[in-house]
Amino acid sequence: MIKRLSNEFNYSLFLPIFIFYLMSIGVQAIAADLDGVDVRRVILKQTIFCLVSFILLVVTSRIPVSTLLRYAPILYVLSLGLMALLYWFYDPAMYALTNTKRWLRIGSFSFQPSELMKLSFILFMVRLTVSYEMEWSQKNLTRDLKSDLRYLVKIAMYSLPTFLLMFMQRDFGTSLVFIAILGALFIIAGVHWKILTIITGIGATLGSTLLVLVFSEWGNKLLYSLHFKTYQLDRVRAWIDPFQYSDTIAYQQVQSLYAIGSGGLFGRGISGISVYVPVRESDMIFTVVGEGFGFMGAALVVFLYFYLFYQILSAALRTNNKANLYLAVAFVFGLMFQIFENIGAAIGILPLTGIPLPFLSQGGTSLIVLGIGLGVTMGFKKKELVMNKIKE
Image (cartoon, rainbow, N blue to C red):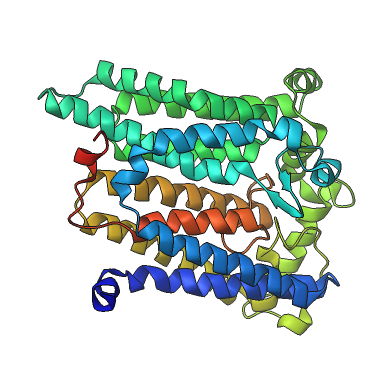
């Protein structure tokens, strides 16, 4: 039995995950020491989160992917329910700090439902995509522009509650993650190129329009009427010209640039970190890596992320199963967008959105749900006929 489990365990995929668990504890300990927080407490807390994440990874890897997809609608509805509960049972401390209702308070533990929604969203959207392809293949019909449009309408209808809740919670950053997941899924599923072109054009137009609205008085009034907050507009202004607002709204970004720039090629060492960066344990955790370990250390972290992505996609491809591939692509691109946005904000090429850096940023919910998601990818099996079992 032990030998069989050992043969099934994907050690190549688990290696970067294990390294990231260790790095998570290490960088949080460094950030805590720099900010004068109890280091032992932070290490203990982060270690517990890593252990829980690992246990759930192992448990989830034993659940067949077909079972997860079969019950994806239930998980999706439960995630929507948890997000809706935020309007009554939100964390008052986090609301006072951020003026947003994104955390549920359970005793002394804060839980962020949107993290669970990311995984539920991927599972449900992949299920819808696979069901759509099965329906057309069983009828021996060829997909065309009209059929793909019907598929997209269905996806939009089921996605709408998620985006509405994100809008009501003013969580623009996480909404972008869901959009990235859908974009990757549409491409890998082979949605008609004309539809993809139109969607890309609409996205570019909306992005350009948003910039115009942020930097015009009438635009600001319109955005405020749509429930945008001043701090969200300030993030865009700070991104365009951070040094003009270095003492006010762009202070965090400018300090981040100073910290990463001062790291040089090989870093200043842990004891040499001296630049103060607000919220460095969360949104700006990459500055700890950049200043302490320099360009080489930062490049190593980015390389490890891409090695993890390579192993996830390889595991899916080896199964020769579309459902596994769709899950892997959606999961990888969701993580990739978060990494790109977080690091991009730290080095000044993207506006700050508050998206955490997977594994390394503070946040037990993110780490635990990430473990569950990676458990799904660890559970990819060659002999499992996922597509045939979803509707059983």
